[in-house]
Image (cartoon, rainbow, N blue to C red):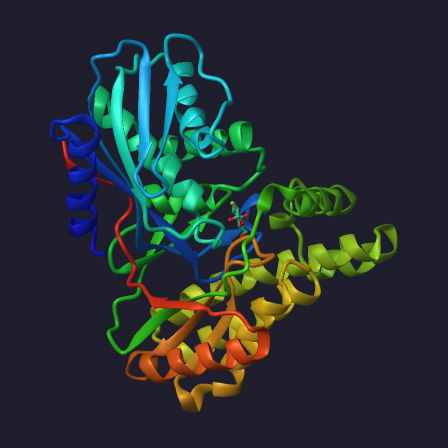
Length: 389
Ligand code: GAF
C-alpha cells in the first residue's frame, strides 16, 4: 500500500469509528539499517534509511474532555489515555509507546487537547524495522500538528527515545527515532551518534536496490540481551579508560585484553570494527562502489554473529543463501539489520536481478528453516510527514 492509499484507508476507518472525517493525518516510517549495528549507544556512526512502511494516525479534537482515544484499525482494539493527569504506563501494551510520547510533551509543559485517533501501521511488528520508533515519532508528529507547535526534529527524536526507555523498558540508542524523524527520500542518513550531526548519502541509483528479507522470527529487545550488550560495552570503555567505545581503537584494545573477560573483549572488537566499517561503507556508496559496500555488509554480519552474538540461525541462513547467489547472481552484500535475535536481513542487490533473487531466497530459506520469509524492496523514504493538517 502506498502512503496515499494508506492515508485514504485510515481516513475511512476514522470516519467509520467516529462518524466524521479526520482533521489531521500524520505518518512516520520504519527503517532499515544498511550498516552500523549496535554502534549508536557507543557514540559511533550508523547508516540507516527510512522505508516505505509507516505508522499512520488520523485524528480530530474529541468531545470527551481529558481523554485520548486511539483505535488500532489493524487489530480492532481501542486504548483510552487519561491526559487530565500525568500520563503513566498502562494497557494495552502497545499504548505505552504512545503514552510515553504524550508524557514527554506533558513534561515540556505542552497542553495536549483531547483527541479521537484512528491508527494503522504497515511496519511489521517484531521485524526489527522499528515499528515502535515509527509509532512514537508518529505520535509526536500528531501532537505537534494538533497543538500547532512544532519542535526541532532532533528534540523530537530524543523525546521519542526517552519514551522507549521509560515506557517500553528498552535502553535503545538514538538511531531508530532519528531516522524516522529525519529520513529523506532518496538518501541514507549517516548519523554521528556523538555529535548528532547527520549527512545525507544519496542512494538513488536505479540499478541497485535494498532488499529486505523478514525471517519471520520475531525479535524482542526488552528480553534483557540488548541491555546486557550495552552494559558489556560500557564495561569495556571503562577498562580502556575512555568515555565510550567511539574513542577506542584496536591498538588500545589488544594490550587491555587480559584486563577484561573474553566476552567483553569480543563485544568491544565488534563495536570498534563496525564504527570503521560504517564510515567506509558510506564512502563506498557515495562512490557507487557496490562491491566494496557489499563486502563490508558481510563483514558486519560475521562480526555480529561471532563476536557480538546477536544473530540467530534464521538470519545466518539468509546471509548464507545470499553468499551462495553471490555477485554473479546480483547480490553485493547481505547482513542482519537492527537489534538482532530474529527480524530482518538486508541485501544490496542489482535491481535487474530482484525477481530471481527473491524467488531463490524464498525457496532456499523455506527448505533450510521450514519458514516462509517475507521479502520486499524499499526505496529510501522521507521521515515523519503531515499528510493533512
Ligand atoms: C535497536 C535499537 F533500538 C537501536 O538503538 C540500535 O541500537 C539497534 O537496535 C542496533 O543497532 O534497533
